[in-house]
Image (spheres, helix red, strand yellow):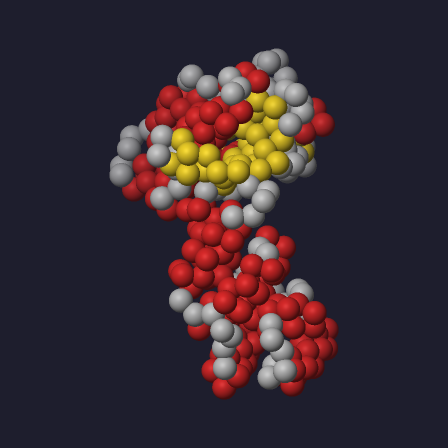
Length: 313
């Protein structure tokens, strides 16, 4: 089974989706017009700059999962069943219906408010009607661009906690480094009174070994040469030695790790800290510090709390 997006040039809403299996194909519109400079012909998808890029990626994953479910359920004509379901999703609002459904399918199990609740909250905040702004799904948040050129980001405690939990549990060092605040992690560490050296360092060394074992396994499985990785590991070990030597004299090991290496050592130290502390409590404290900042404005919409700040739509 293959799912492909393509442009139907004879239609105004020109983005179509086709699903093929064993020589049979069904095609349907997704209710969206793609501008020429937002279409990636080589990959048959909209560019990452398109407002619905993430929703369309999620939609393709949804179709694959739905296909598997229908196939195992012995549905007679799976492709046409899928087509009918998509038509029902897009009937009223086109691709906005897809964005709404994908957002809710992925996020409501985590306790994150529904897409329409975000919309209601933004309209309450801005006083705008739905034809005066555009909504864009980014992960489990929404960003809004208005016709006056104002941009806003809207988030929730449940959404931020879900992202933090995902970063830590998956050991996504790049996301920890770029999408979380070093200052808040430092505050959490210092507010807790720190961690004794004999407790922290063994956990850190274990994490370091696990990280490098994983790096080598990935290269070897890909058939690559580990020579360059050997040099990188040696450099990383020297950084760890500096960290351990400075540990006792440091009042803030998060800041210390960041200054030594902000790409791997710093997110590793954050990960170890959360394994020693109660991670869920730390997520709560992080959200309190983040949304308590001056950038955010709290919006209460039908008893649900949202947080809004100026964004970059």
